[in-house]
Image (cartoon, rainbow, N blue to C red):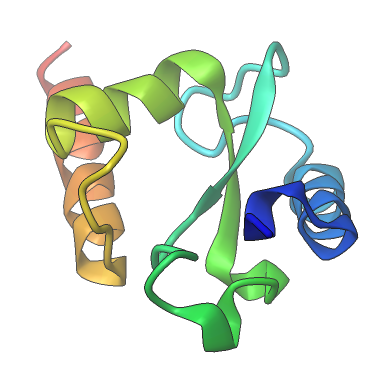
Length: 95
């Protein structure tokens, strides 16, 4: 069974969103999604650890995967997330 269709995943997602309340990049509270900091597909030992999750709005989640990582299928590591946050801070500083 696909781990994203499990009860444990739904609980993890709800807990991450409830903890963060808003997108941790833009501050938006619309279309909130839970993002794995270290990819849940490759890191099954921390897949459902809420400390391995962050709430993002759909737009920021897409920006991370499609523009920063080039695909939703590409493996994500904690360093990728931290580099993305640094880039966002840098861009915000230019405005």
